[in-house]
Length: 182
Image (cartoon, rainbow, N blue to C red; front, side, top):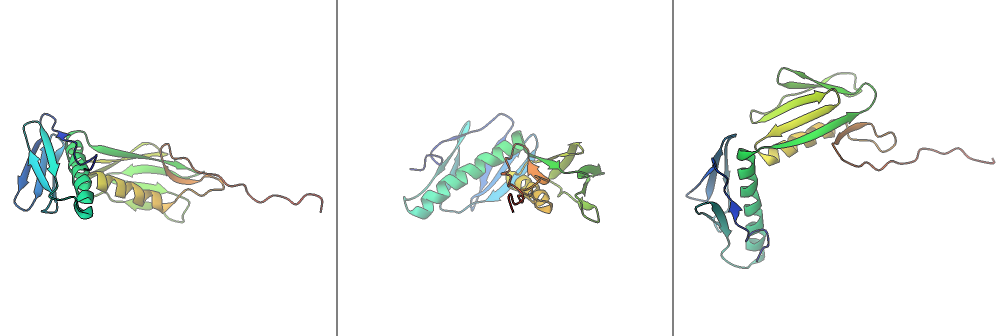
């Protein structure tokens, strides 16, 4: 049995879960509503204060889907009750970020500024000129937006300039060394 899949998901107060025909799950909470479609063979049962995910057989596909569906439903519940956020930091001389209404304006050493428009369910904010916060209800969308921002100027290994996640360790390389005794 899947160790993740067999754990029941606790249902916080103010969060409602409904399962429609065809395993379409809708989770509603204080921060909004999320809907997702899951495979029919995986059962999702809403009990009093918890949700249980079951699988029909022990085949490899069903075992894989069991833990996946349980994790996705748990992330939906966390998203509508608490939300998710990713924090990015910018390092480099002249590199900075600022908000322009809802859009994020980045100066990353290019000949032009980069404007990023968030989708409706995401929020972008800057706590300082070098700190960007991406937040929202959908964990996948928050992670994808943070990855797209990071991809604009990935950290280079020689000087460490670029956009990185807060707390990310970057392995630095030694530069060229002068020849001694030649």
